Image (cartoon, rainbow, N blue to C red):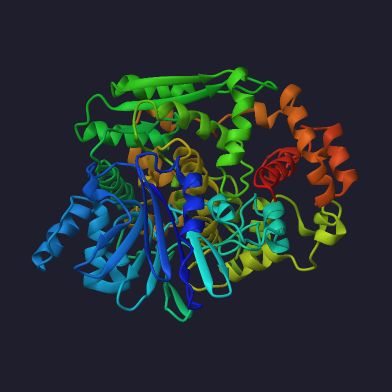
Length: 590
């Protein structure tokens, strides 16, 4: 896990090494263990390193292979790198390191851009062909690792974070009106390639972009999970198949030259990971849970459940209790760590959790992704009997934060656009072939978009803010493919994730499997009061916010008068949603 950056020119000028160098301090937390810069004519590559595999200097980046004529910067982990290394050695390749980074270089030389099909893992990388000058950018299948782009006439810059591109300079920092509508409608998600900033875009998941020296480029999507039924599998066989795939996924993610821990929330997803690692013989596994002070009559921890799992599997368990003295100061730090504004209160929890966890380990496994691939959320059951041709309206009713018509009473007139772009986006996705039911269509969309730009991005941004690598076994692409082909009824059973609950029975304690679904409880955000409410009010009344004028003042005033009642369809605090966006824009100098 690292931070990458770079610039390529196709206007006849040398690449600006100083601009790339300005990006690297923004990536230091992602890679606190080293820094590298490589320049060759129209291309400059920059890198910040987090040492996880091959801790020697031979694994440093940018990695240059003069014999093959290739240079690479890479963020992520290739879990099957040892197997690929053996295969490539069989083809005659010689290695000068034991890193997964070098495996990517050799794999690219052997298979070209199709090398991505051979990788099991999470990755974003840029590879340069010395002779041709061609640059290839790629992102993993589920978008676990980010890659942001800033393109102007004759130049393309890229980085692991959006703020790094802003630090390089010469970026159009105006707000994208379409992205703003997505933010207000789609639970703060802005689908790729857009971001809230007009001058910055992001490479979509499962995408390879090949850029030639004249600036022309081609882009292709190299993977998608098919949501079409597997007729060769009986209903009774699915739990065991899911169990075996998850078992392999968890085992793969133990590959490291440093210890690996687990973020244990007390839910079935992370508990299952711990159980499988124990089943595989892991002893002395380090686990971590977080809890907050109660507020508004809402509890702030799930320690009762995480303690059950920690005790049963004899983990070295850490309960991290966060008091009000740590909570408020963490808000600004959390906003600063966001590559894009993310409304979920979980962000602060993950930032504080990552701060403490990073004192013990450099790698953790986490349970994100299970709800999006196995139908664990509340908006899936209402779609169960909806015909596919009526699914868009049903999905929008359940998931969208507010109907499009309400935006006219909330956004200032100059920020409104006529079209309901979020509904059109969903309609285009649902209209594509490869999803047989409304639930299938929703799961496909959520796994490709909402998952990538909400929970996965949240975990990446907050863990990497503390130099902590998070691995997500539920997003092993082979498990995702299997889950996509599973009948929706099996996933919706038992209140959601039914097939996973059946798979976990006898492995995970029943108390955890049969509990009511929980969420990362952060009462201090769900119930705004005191100093936190003052902070929200200050953000929305700041001069920058007034000059920007995103929201109708009467709407803001009504929320401030009743800060905790108006909520979005999914229960998010509307006042926090507005304030978070302003906090982020002000933090980034926009």
